[in-house]
Length: 135
Image (cartoon, rainbow, N blue to C red; front, top):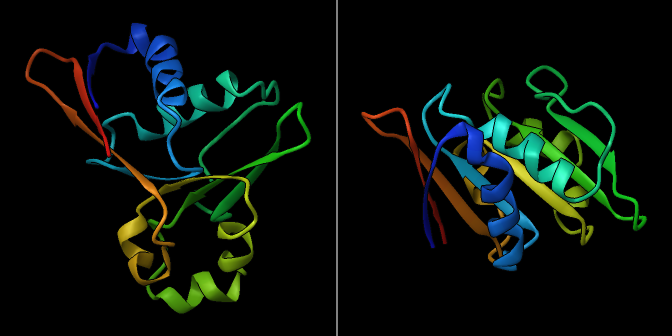
């Protein structure tokens, strides 16, 4: 699925993603500043999360409660140097929990990613719009 959108259309874009029934583990790829965290924040809102959401750059993972009792785990692995750092924090427990896992900078833990996942790649276009590809 490919979607071209502006930041004003991010709510509709997030809903399209959820309506497409992606795997619960979603990898987010794209240059720094392209809007990965902004999209993840909107996905959290669309899932019913009312708490403030933020990037877990320093904590590596933020946990949010969905009203249905499930959780969303938002990871940002930008700062890790080795996959063992993710293993030490118990990343396997999160990835195999059956909850939503939104992962930024997944290439830092590529050997730990379960086979069943979806990938979102966001690219900033010259006109300021974003092109999102979900596979």
